[in-house]
Image (cartoon, rainbow, N blue to C red; front, side, top):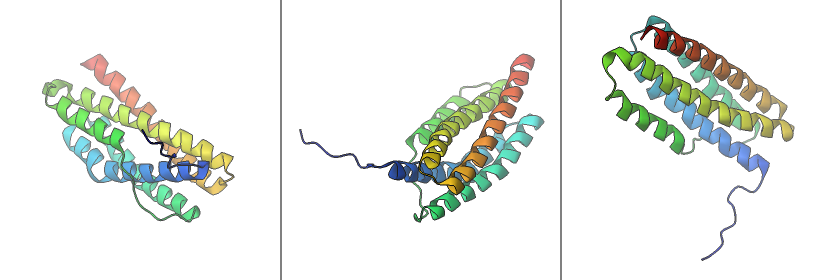
Length: 165
């Protein structure tokens, strides 16, 4: 068995890796996943929350691109297998849910995605701060704040849907 040295050997490389993954995540959410959820849901409040977050998500992608620029890194995404897993889980699950529960199911799927994004943003902010990359940390913190706000809104909606379902 041969030993391969780690590909990411510095905090800066780890930050860039996170940013490229975040760019893929935000772009995928904005182009396909959120529009699909918006079409699927029938609850007006959930639809509005998803539509508002779609606008924020586009800004998040721009902030991530700007962060990469601040680090003199080329814009480019990176595979995000966990996001693909979340998408596959949604697609297989939605087919099994009776129509009356689809909004609850989609709210739960959106909540799961928010948790995933929050985990990566939290780490990226900490790394950016530790590297003294204040502008990057600020851009990512802005995104993180909006992700937390979206999560809280989605949880409130999901709770209402669960109580009425």
